[in-house]
Length: 75
Image (tube, rainbow, N blue to C red; front, side):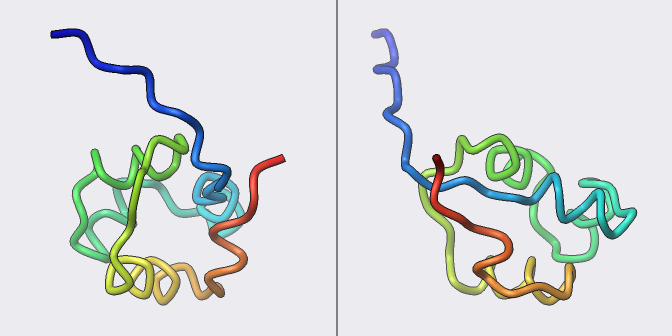
């Protein structure tokens, strides 16, 4: 059975920009927050459909940012 194309969520994850600003790689973040590289990659590429508050908190703590700096409305 073919997968249905997923509709955009209207949310953009600024993970790539924040990592770049901090000189950190996705692999380093994955190890720091104990979240799989694949799950972080999905968020980074705006393919994430949901995120747990605990995951959001861990990412924000590791990147020393606020939730609003990480997740923004897509244009």
